[in-house]
Image (cartoon, rainbow, N blue to C red; front, side):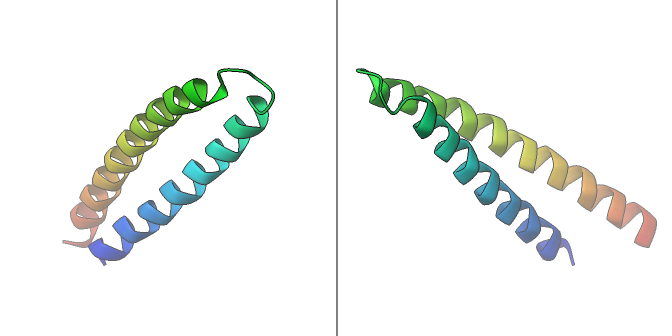
Length: 69
């Protein structure tokens, strides 16, 4: 069951990350230095989403184990 919780978190991460990238690409499509901006946004989004998924996964697994013995 713990693996399923982390798998759902990974899927959530991937969907969120793809949506963030599509949005960032649409906002910088006509800029001259868009690749530099996209790379910076990629790093920021990646670290924020990765930390959020890990922290949320740990919290959910801890709560699950606490309430299900």
